[in-house]
Image (cartoon, rainbow over all chains, first blue to last red; front, side, top):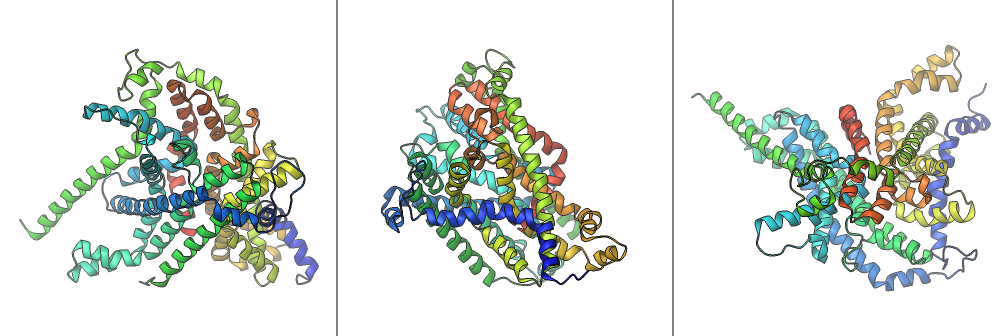
Length: 292
Length: 287
């Protein structure tokens, strides 16, 4: 049997990769391309006709102030969340690789928030913010305490806090792998050469872990930009729509207000912003990577 | 005291401090879960009065559980989640490992490299961009929403690219071509070579892909909520969301529902903790 003929190759491909390719195209590629087409129509979601409107949806998307407010909030939320997630995750990774007793137990414990879906976590935290923290506030102060979730800034703070709590354990695992990959030799050599442990960390370990940082920051940016579950269950965009993030705005625009074309156009803009930020970060990060 | 003893003592002290810091952080991390656990055994009135008390004024109660289970149809949604997660996970593993096999071994064929690059590139597409067209195509045109099988296939389709990427790496680095040639000489067809020789050697990657995807399917909310809108098809996250919408003021029931929603995966975690942490870590580093 000749294994180089085109028909043999095609048969092999269909036999092994046929189902995977079909599913991949059916769920990702076709909807993606069709979605680009939908941005050029003003479809209401139910009628058969999809009137072609050209670039009107994009013009409207750029005029939609609530969308850009949501986008602005998403950027602010992402900056705070990404920075804090990575600081906390790095600190946790440092602590659980330092050789203290029970470090595997702690590692497993910090990962627990990742096991549970955003919807459930959001409701758990809603209870904590609305009831437990208010009760603590009452116990330690005489004034009236209100839930953080009832003020606009408080709600954003809560979203950031919950995201940090949720993702820190996951990013910690990546930093742990980074710590493990830095060989003990170079660290010891720097200590013998007269570095303090802090200097060794700053000048030797952290530069060698650069790829872990690039990866963690990329993952946290791309997750924060499209966060939806926690936003829905923790704040639902309240109070007064002041905590609606971009993904939630897109969802509401399409499925609640039935502006499918506009919603899809706004989703595409969100995707572009997210992709540009993510790719830039990776390119900047990779540039300065050092080899051990 | 010699230098060595001094250093050893200092190390001991710093370890003790780190251990205490870790313990405090650990407490912060599980605080929300503690809150749920202590309040689930209280009556509604006791929770409102003092959510921090270990035991409510009316004492210990289990009545929240049966009520919440009945109202969120716990067993129905649990089995829905279980069926969808397990079928989708198995399918993802089979479909994407096979696809990556043919892609790796035909590296010179332009078509394979094209598909592979397309898959890598598609990983940056967020779900938000695809949800409207998905509902339009599968709801409006084909009318296949509200079937578990639709959700299973969509789940698989979304994870194929990532899973192929991971299997691609594993086959390329860990499986020597010579092994397959030996199998062919011994009389195996490609199909047999794959199932009898290569696939069993991919066990570590299979575990990683399986764990990552199973967790993602079990916890996913947005896609299932768009596909499954009938109450008897709900998965755990949708049921939790729907339950909260109706009973949000009945805190005892809410606590029980939240605990029930978390319990299956937490129980699993107790037994498979090592594999889950390792699987996620190796998956994250490769991804």
